[in-house]
Amino acid sequence: MTGKKAIAQLQKQGLNYNQKKHLLSCQGKQELDLNYCYLGASDTAGKNYTGQAAIDSYYRTL
Image (cartoon, rainbow, N blue to C red; front, side, top):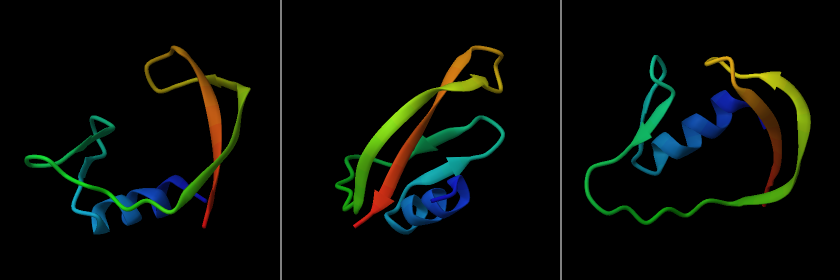
């Protein structure tokens, strides 16, 4: 799944995404129904947008 697809699904759940700040937010308490299964991660992603070490996480939709 791409990041764009994940963000679209989170927005359908009522979350807001600020692309400039890479920030998810919502108003008040929010219960999410996410249909993802965590498959694992790789530490070979390199640096993220802030220059810090990052990982790639892998998920599959249920």
